[in-house]
Length: 138
Image (cartoon, rainbow, N blue to C red; front, side):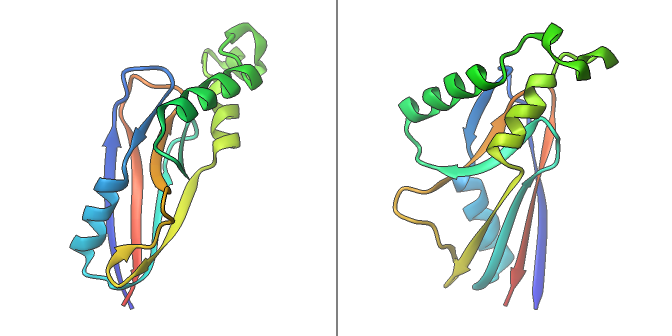
């Protein structure tokens, strides 16, 4: 079995936004030379997420509105912010959206459904954050 590891870095200017990263992940899969296996894509920060869904702007705005309704950015609301932080909401948003995705690799390509795309979700932006891409297989 072979493995291949790379890291992506994102610095999203907005406090909350979604970045379509499928093309970057596809490129890393090709570079890995692995034709059958698994690709893990993992947000390495507790206020960021990686998830799979449709690349449709209305859906993305619906997610942002829904997340803000569930965990509004209101620093006085969260005990976590007593530490001097102001990102208690971002921790909750990440918990809902998830930490990582695992996608099968078949015949050297990501085996995604017809509308599935991979996204980096940022909930406390404006500073660099890393994403791990780990590919294992043959």
